[in-house]
Length: 113
Length: 111
Image (cartoon, rainbow over all chains, first blue to last red; front, side):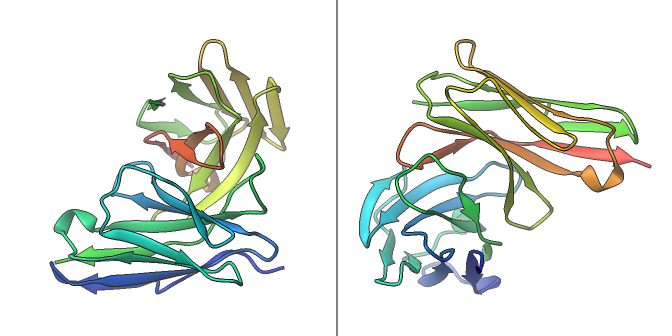
């Protein structure tokens, strides 16, 4: 059984650019959530996908968008990057809509210059 | 709106001392509470999950309690070791697997 993987590990972009981050969920998990963690803070919920449909969204603007694919892997897209988007982006997977432990990936460190 | 607070933000103890980490939340309507460990620049590792109907969970040197009515949870780590140095985060789930996190407590265990 493989764990949650994310790519790339690190990314540097400039203001105004667009970025795509990728997440492969743990085997058998059909729910993927994305979180943004600014330096020195706790993660904040961006949105969640369940069986390829968005299933809830946090307080993030529409330039944060996502996708989930039939194999339950997921993408996070951020348009018109701002300096404050610099953060660690984490994805987490669970086997469904149950109250089970969430399994987190290692994260993607995004730096916006 | 659920708010989760962890105090203190940082803690330094000598090796062998017991650690006590606190977490408070404002809305008692939760499904569960989870404690995570995070090493610098890394992802989160789940330590313990306490369902809303439970009062505590134990795993090895770790014990976590939950008092829903008062909106509090405590993580105890017995006989701390330098390898326990990390940031500890608590998070509550209000439904649909969406977690609300506290700001974390950064722990340093000195040899």
